[in-house]
Image 1 (spheres, rainbow, N blue to C red):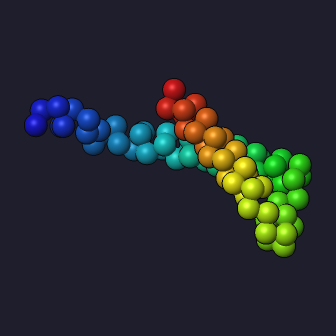
Image 2: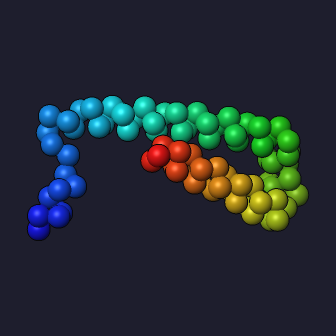
Length: 78
């Protein structure tokens, strides 16, 4: 029981933790949006996936975006 309670943030530090988390979420979303914009310039994503039904490109784009998300999450966690 004591170990579980050790992970809880104290009330006076809660606002600081929430603000820090929101800042990191915003930074992560900005990096993710920039990465998606670069990917959409390199590949014609909408045409290839929606019109040409290119499943392989959809899997590759999804994998790259997951990799970018993992990198951003690791950078945020330190």
